[in-house]
Image (cartoon, rainbow, N blue to C red; front, side, top):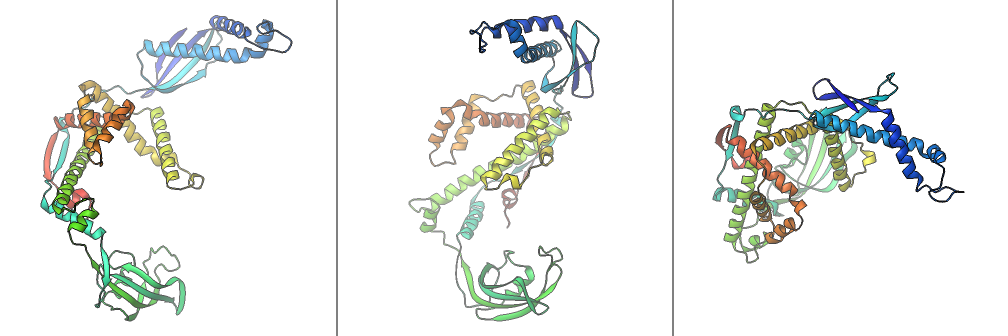
Length: 434
């Protein structure tokens, strides 16, 4: 068997494979004779079927198997000899030759990109900073209180944040239109449940009061027959209820899982949770910047074979997610191009990270993995059980080891890049409105 290499564009490689016909015929004869010892055929005792009948019955199948194995060996020997790292599987094409002694083939495949990790000293990373204290705990308590809001009747005009119950009737050119009528309809003023002009008309009315007003629907309104049209609404307010926020007391603390209702314990627990979440979000923002810096510093080509495999993996994950949400996938065909950009980023980062980890010896250490497992377990009611679960089966640590490796890469980049600390606003970091 012989192999020669002719490089094509970028990551694609082409190798000529030559297989001796005599070797194929020899291997074919041996395979058929081995098969003949086990062939069962009516009229013959087991293993006594004549060789020419075995060859006639199984010759094509055996020849295909022998040739496939010969090609695998030839291709394997060639890539090992040339020290090529093959990505995906080769495409084998027969060549037209006049040789009477050899079968000629062309193997077309891709290789992994070879590169030296780029200089990260030019990278610029902005690291958010935020100290969690009483103010942040108070803001979080305000949000938790709003999530537990109740409403009580108010003998005053409706205002923002009030819960109102109304009857309304909409008319277009003097005639009621579809969807423009309801009785005892509840909504919260100021939360965008209704069009702004509609909410403005309700604001200021007391229980029992009515109003008639004109309203022009937005040009991009979802109901095309109403988009840009002016209609008239008649509304009657049936109920106005003011929001009532709970007091931060023992009962509130118990609703937050503090068995003895100790408000101090509750605040301490909220602060501890906030610190973990703030740390996580800061790390995530820094990590995103590091990954972008790595991509920018390492403009590598990516094997199409790896991209296609990643697209298929993402598509399968999307299908499973949608099916778990109750969607029927036959009614929602997923397109590969939706995942192309995400797949390219993931594969590119995977190749870069692998090279950086190898070059800089950034593999995960057991103590790092243990620390991450213990940190994850802290958010559960029984942390020790979570730790035991992870270590009960070593393969469960795979994702944690991946995180530890990424953390090592982030630390390595931060040690070389230009890092600027910048104070972050609590609301911005947590993605909350003031």
